[in-house]
Image (cartoon, rainbow, N blue to C red; front, side):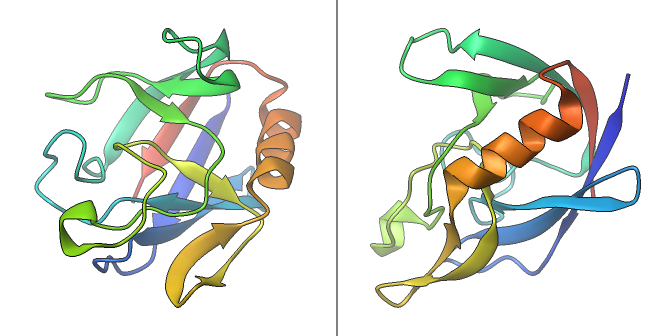
Length: 140
């Protein structure tokens, strides 16, 4: 089973960008929520190693062709799915994440807020890297 590594950059109220690497090769960037002590729906997950399972369809049916990050203490329903923003809603930043990871082809800004850009293309790159198979994710 493959192991992918996520190297995070600094966390801000606008979100936490990071770079995802597989076999030493850059796959895509990721956007996550800010660091908020692993609180459900408002925080990124802690550093660690997690089993990630491919899902043709999420449990709610809202998302298709995504991944589910398992084994996060005190958390459930963490997906890797398309989206741009991962800011702190309580501080009036936009977000497409309730604790999920948002793949992106590059990090930039939309309307003055940090955002992941070209999310669908990045998700396709992730599918190519994993062949839609389960994998381990090491978060640094």
